[in-house]
Image (tube, rainbow, N blue to C red):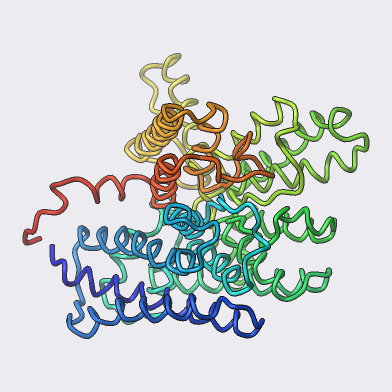
Length: 483
């Protein structure tokens, strides 16, 4: 493995980070607040660290899978490091640990926060906080590949390493075209939602930052009470619609609306995803009507928002779900575990793997009755190999094991079990809120510093789909050898 080439490509990642830090600095300047200095200095430092390896290391047309893995994981970790610089320099509630937590939570689109008073931050920092979502939602490596498409065959390795293996199977286009599709859909959805939110009463700053968080399925809001601050049904409906769209496979969205096909409506996974959202909303509405809400309209309004917010891993809130009945809370945590579809900005296990699990279970039940039967698993028009089915189920098992270990570690440092396990579920799924003090109207400020570091590791594992991070830290992966 050639570490100098890894540093060159990580340098490109840092330059993209610095670009958005500069933009955030000038947003602060435009609003006349005092965040310009910390953001500008952070941008300069990040740009310097990014440009040196590009100057001194020649480009490589070909890189290996191992080098691609190291570029992706190192790029994500260093992005989170530079993302915390303006927070540390600003101070206030941002201790070193809190700044790291907020940065990782932003870039992984988790949306969990340590801030008790978000609205105290200046506009520049609030914009940077939302920008970390927007960069992380598409993936910082994907941004590099989309903006700098002339990286030769190296782009294919990085694309395959960054994008979920489940999502790649559903894209019918080449890697280069896929990158353009993702960028077009991502930017397009952000722009359209921003315009609509402004039409329904948001100012441009709130519209942009909430669109960043919605399309990235992140959940950072510049308001202390999240979307509940606006108490506007029209705004909530707009955000619900765009959360659902952001939870769909971007390739299917593109083919449906730009190529004239109806792939979305033919997809087994999309039908499962939409059906579950409707069923979950109906159950939570029935559960909360009479106990939390006297009006069926209110029960539907708030239940639908919470179910879709957690079911897409967005994490916005319009009410306190801690007050919901136990049935509703358990359902919300299931949605936080599963989340939306692969190929979207959503986190979690993904609906695709759950469909694969149910299909595999059905196959095994049939084999118990007819041991000699030849039964294949089919999702839509695609036959699923036994190996792919096994890997999907194995991922679910490893994912749940990480949630269990993370929750157990938090309990070991005296975190309340409810907050420990639901907080870990929220971190692994990049969802944001759990239950208890870390619920929809709370934050993670009371979690001990050690616990915050544990949760950030879980966030990164969830965002990078576990295996890449594990391989990165295996000693044999660091051996310098010819490949």
